[in-house]
Length: 314
Image (cartoon, helix red, strand yellow):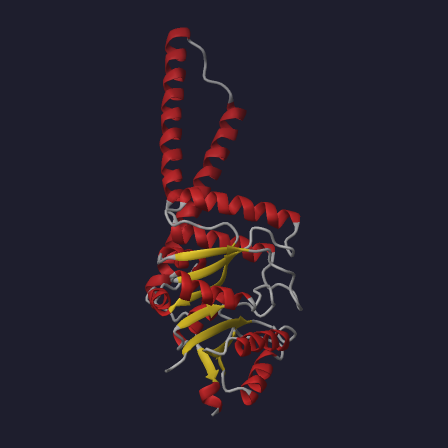
C-alpha cells in the first residue's frame, strides 16, 4: 500500500543559522512518523547569505529535500505560493525555519486530520515572546479592526503554520491574485479547520525580517484585500461634511439677513479650509491605494520568478 506524503514548505530569507537546526528537528519528526512519506521544499527567497548553499548541501545527502531559488527577493507571500504549486504531497504544511513553528506539532496536526476529520489544522499564537509592547498593542488592535470590517473571519494570532489536505491547497493555488494576503486567503477558502492555540517561542537563531514598518504595510494589505470599508467610510464622512457645510451656510445667510452681522472669522475659515483639504487628500489616498492594487493586478506580472531548482542541479 502506497504511503501518504506530507510536503513541508519552508520559505527562507537569510536563514543560514536556522536551517541546520530546523532540518535536524524536522527529519527527527519524519523518522518518528514512519507510516508517512515526507518531502521538504525549501524556498530561497533571494537570500544574501549562505542559505542556498546550505539547502544544496542538504539535497546532496537527502533526496527528500527539494528547493526553489528565486531570481530575487519576492517576499514570503510569493515563497509560500511557489511552495504550494511545487508540493506533491497528499498533505501540505507551511513552516518557518526559525523554529517558532515547532516541528513536533506536525504529529498532532496530522492526527487531527486523520482521526477527527478536519481538512486543515492551523496554529494561532495570541501571545508571542518575541513581540515588544508596541507590537503587541498594534497586533491586538489590528485583529479587532479586521474582525469588524472584513466579511472574512480572522483568527487572532493566526500563523501561516498549518497542515492542509490536497483539496485545500488546490483551492488556494487557484487564487492567482498578485497582491496576496495568505492569512485572509486561508480563511476565505473555508473548509473544516481546527485551531490549536500555543505560545510561539523565541527565534532559535538570527533576527526577524519583519520590522514594524513591514508589518504595518502587511496589515494594510490585509485591509485592502479583504475589506472595502475604508471606501464606505470616506463616502459617509463626505456626506456628513456636506450636510454640515450646508447647515453652516444657512446659518450664516440667515444671520446676515436678519441681524445684519458681517461675515467674519478669517482665521477660523483658514483652519477649516486646511482641515477639509487634508481630509480630502486622506480619502483620495485611500482610493489611490485601492487603484494601485487594481493596477498591479491587471498587469498580470508573475508572483515569483525561478532562478533554479534541484532539477536544474541534476
